[in-house]
Each structure stands twice: as structure tokens, then as C-alpha cells.
Image 1 (tube, helix red, strand yellow):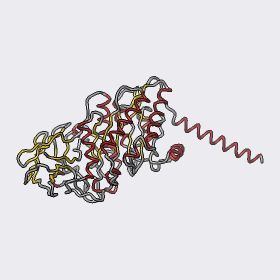
Image 2: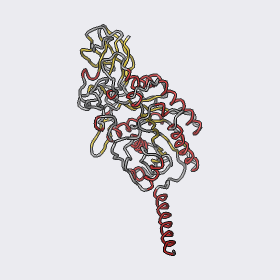
Image 3: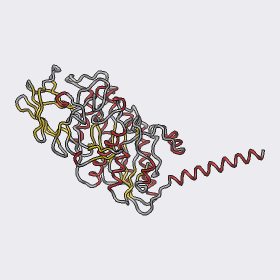
Image 4: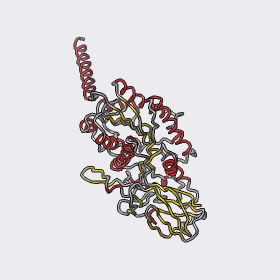
Length: 425
């Protein structure tokens, strides 16, 4: 019997030592007064990095940036976000990184930590779940209170240390399920409600005066929807992508990161790869930095207005970094560089296009009145991404000065035009 007691004692001591070592390794090492900028990401599978084979070294997030990149617990245990919470905790405890995917916000956090002062701590983590329609992310569903709980947890941890804490923005990555599954949800109304609820509930936690911005990507899943037809006059699959364009144009609390079609997708299907996540994260950093420093709204490259000139359509764009470029190297050529003008009979009447400073002229063979002017509404069935998915070739020239260096290769970070579907009157 005494041997059993000895064995139990050894096991208990071992467990205590392991827990102690775990807590020691992940303890917050920062001292003095700090300002915590919390910029989480909320959405479905792309927000959780599903399938993107991780290239971020979690240890480097602590070591390289002097402990200034933290998670919702204000410690350094990242990963496992695609798992249930109890599994996530177990995997973090034993440093099991299976299903710890690449998240765009890792790159965003690294860029912010590099450029902001040493008194600034970047707190980031994802919320949501794969295959979630927007209702499942609303206040009435279960994922929302979990996300709010994590933000409150980060806030309480910061306040216990006497640190300042606020949330300048949330990165939004959701929309595939509402498009593919034809949920019949009024996506525009639902997204605004989620934004209003999060803004109110987070400000109630942090007591900040500043509103929380939504930094919005754009999904690339129209061809995965079973009834998609690029020639349909009423292309209902484009209601979700168009929502982002409308809100970025019209609503002061919605800002741009970028569309996903310029990137490689895993199996060319639904999820961008790790390099794409990193590039998206760089765009999120640029937008977040503008918000933090009060430099004005980030619109990305989106259409501002349409006008008719005879049989031509003039599309005026918001161009962050001129000049506009038609790039068929980074993104495989799409017919008419991704543009189409669809009349009520389903005919594409576009004949040619040309760039005129901040405008694109779409030359048509018939009158474009009451036609749908579209961009990147095309692609092979069940494909996503820059090779065969819904895509276009229009970008600005931001990548001449903003470059992501990764694994010995440079990636220019241009603003690519968002997909759109607009009525020409």
C-alpha cells in the first residue's frame, strides 16, 4: 500500500511541476503601464484560418515582439481556435498544435507591434465557428456571448494590471454560408444589426467613447452556390458580397481590408491558404493603423459611381494609390478583365474596356440603361481564387510601397477591386 501512496505522491508532484512550468512559460512578462489595443476577428471558417497550414511561429509572437502580442487571456498561448474550448485548453496545455491554423490577425498583430510604441500591447483572437450563417453570429445565438466573454476577459485581465484597454476595430470574415446555403436572410440588415450590437456591448465593457469599426474582407464563393449563373440578371448570390461594397461606401463604421480572389485557395475551393491569410492580415494592419492614428477611413478599391456616355458605362472608383492597373500576372486573365454588363435578357453587352485615370470605361454594343454592371462575377463552377474562381484583374499600385516579406519572397500588397453588382440607370 505504501508503494501506491508513493506513486500517487510522484504523480501529484509531477502534475504540480507541469502546471507550474506551464504557467511560468506563459506568464505575462510585461511591467509598467501599458495600453492594450484589442482587435479580434469574428466570423466563420476563414476567420479561424480553416485549412491554412500555419507558418506563424507562436513562440516568436512572444520573443520577437518582447511579449507585446497576447491572446484573450493576455498570455501567449495561441492556436486551437477551431476546437471546442475544453479541447483548446488541453491542446494549449500540452502544446499540441494540430488544427492550429494560420490567422490573418497574426500578421496584423506583428505589423502593429513593429510600428507602435513599446508601451502598446496588441491583443488578438478569433471568435465564431465554421459553417456559420450570420444569424449564428448574432446576439440571439450562442457564439455571440462567447465572443463578448473573451473581450470582457481580456479587459478584466488588463484592468487587473492597471493597464488601459480599448477596442478600435473588429475584423469581419463571414458570408460564405449565407451565400452558398441560400439562407434567405436579409444579409445587409443582419450585418448592420451585428455591428450595432457589438459596438454597444463592447463599449459597455470598455467604457470607451470611440465607436468600434468593422474591417471587412469579401468572400469569393459565388461559384460554389449551386444555382449560380453569371448571366442571370438577378444574381442573388451577389447580395452578400455587394453588402460589403455598399457599407464601405455609405457607413462610417465599415472599412475595407480586401477581397480574397487575388490569393491562392486550398484545393481552389473555399479557404485561402496561409500566404493569403498573411496578405489579408497586412491589409487589416493598414486599415487598423489608419483607425488608431485617426488618418481617415480606408475604402479600399471600390466603385464610387456609375454614369452613362452613349453606349458606354463610366465606372468611377475610389483609388487609394493611383494609378489603376490591369494585372493579368498576379490574377489569371478573366474575360474583359472581370467586367460584364448584363441586360434583362441575360446578354453580356460589353465589348471592350479602357482605364481613364480613376475611371474604367466599359464599351458596350447596345445601350447599357437598366443593365447590371458587374465585376468578378464569373469563374468555373466550384472554384475560388486567382486562377479559376470569380475574379478580375483591376488593382491599384499600393504594392509599389507596401510589401510583405515572407519566407524569402516579397509580396506586393495592392488594393484589388472588390466584386460588385450595380444597376446602371
